[in-house]
Amino acid sequence: MTTSAVPDATGRFGRFGGTFVPETLIAPLRDLDHAWQEARGDDAFWDELNALLADYVGRPTPLYLAERLTAHARGDTGSAARIWLKREDLAHTGAHKINNTVGQALLTKRLGKARIIAETGAGQHGVASATAAALVGLECVVYMGAEDARRQHLNVTRMTMLGAEVREVESGSRTLKDATNEAMRDWMASSENTHYILGSVVGPHPFPSLVRDLQRVIGRETKQQCLDRLGALPDAIVACVGGGSNAAGIFYDFVEDARVKLVGVEAGGDRPDGDATTGLHAAPLSFGEPGVLHGSLSYVLQDTHGQTGEAHSCSAGLDYPGVGPEHAYWKDAARVDYRVCGDRRAMDAFLLLGRTEGILCALETAHAVAEAIDLAREMPSGANLVINLSGRGDKDVEEAARLLAELG
Image (cartoon, rainbow, N blue to C red; front, top):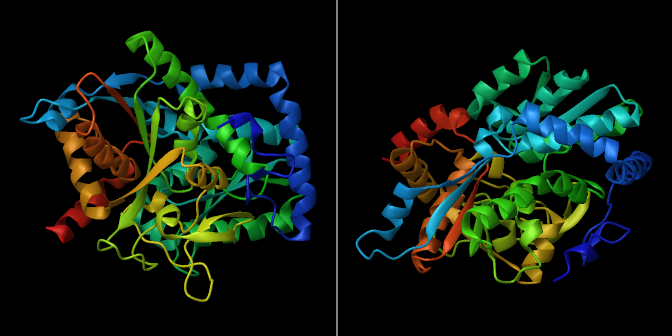
């Protein structure tokens, strides 16, 4: 498939994407699209961003051979692919989110706006937004569901210490969907002086492609690192998928090379095998239907009346009933293999990575680790598999301990 063909001028990835928003947001979205197209073609913008990515964010992040995790996957049979970790957890603030927020903060300055807003689930995008706002001198408000704020109290504290105002959302399921709703409402009322730093490849055009382009640095680095270290492209890449920014970032530069297997892992929650009931999982690509959510058409979890359904995951960052439209496009084109990993398997992988490699990853990332181990066992020992280790698990330690006690 040809990645350059999408999105089209209207923000469509095939039948997905688009701009389904109130009239009040059409003008700011048009202004944002214009500013982004100008910035994309401006060497000075990329020089400034790349300097910050190197000297402030700490890029490139390492590509690390997880030898003990590989040995565990091989077990008694001695057969499994070598497992490599793309260490986004080592980026400043502890996750891939900073790649996007620094870029959008620079774009906010180009737009001449003094205030940013953001939504957050796991808190990492909120922390990254607060960080970028402090870096360039912007006012920052972060919307966060009250349930997520409970699960991610450490990140709430970090945001506040960085100078951001955290507004907890009590409506709905009190998670990421509801935080996004409130951020959109704020933006409708304040777009004249406010830019919305959307945290994933979701929402109305141009956000899905804008965020993807800012996260592409992950895939570009991974490709070069594999060529330098292995003399070839990897055989497979695995990443977790909520909204889908870390996965889109690492997948995009490999989409046109069919030799590289791409696997996205959604949150299966506590769904019994075969049960697609909403509220038990957060897997719209696996169990959802096409629908409009937060300004774009993609796969969405829906109830029997066509209303947006509830989502559930042990990881706050995957607890979202929709997904980016480019992922929907890749699913329908059968370019990416989307799989499901439940809470129990994710928790086991969280512990396994810690005890084999000394790395506590984010609970979101643990879903990718779990599926990658199974996939590695299906591959020959000479093959190479890369996991996008999208974030570190400091934020999840208390919640993981509680969940492990419950799961027994």
